[in-house]
Length: 432
Image (cartoon, rainbow, N blue to C red; front, side, top):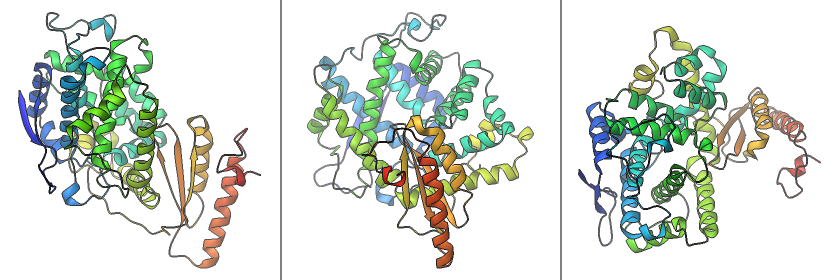
């Protein structure tokens, strides 16, 4: 199956547009057609890539755009960089790579590395709400506060692997991966007698439980390649809307191949390339995904979703997949007003490592109880958590000063619980 698609359809180009041809292999073709049959392909054509983040219309992308870009980059790697990889795209994957007791429905038609990349690229993106991570965060917040809601999600599928994954993600409030649970549910609603659906399910479970794979596993290597290509994809699209002087020229194929080679080649020292990617990812975190004043607004939307769900839903009568995930009228998929009733400058911003998560979560809980403050948090791709605090705009000067004092006092109290805080840490001055 061949899909012709313009990756930059709404932008004026100086020399040429970016119409590309993407070859879907038989596995991905079968899965794509199955997803299209149940309306999922049309759905991801409507879902904004960046969810609640407001983007100029001519620069807006959908999850489908994002999928197509990744598939195109994989085509570049296959055609131009196979000799630089540990395993080629044609290298087959044995069923035992997934789990000991798994057997392909058709053992004569083993998936290749290329099949793994295409299947994972598609299925990784079909589990998003229309409000993407803002809605996913709302889910984790409600589940932590309401055991009935947690059980609603955990019991959305009878497969024990799904239930264990759901419990782990919800208990750790891992909203950045929650869409993978939805992706599993999408596949559960497909025809599982088709090998592409069966293999896609195994890929997702292996990806979620990647820490259990042996280091020499082909799947572990495939997942690393997938993440690098996915990262280049979102950097290329999202730098277009970032307030930075950096861009990635998707129209320059030679340059794209060079960047991919630097990241993927087995014969390069990838350290500097990885540092570059990490720096750009942090830049996008701070200027696009979670710019200070916007991050508080997005957190308030998550909170609003949680409040409305708790108020309106009778969990005994709710089907999580149909009523909350699929339905466009779901609170998690509706458009919500961006309300900024707080001072958008002089925002307190503190970042905590994953090891300090207990301190940061406790601090967030206490800060939310302080009158005349507006609080938010977000998780970084690095595993760190960032907390933001601002003062309510429409309160008098005395109330503002008192709120700032209470915020600082509370913050210092919790920062002092971090042992051996470095003098190089920007938070150090608040602890001495």
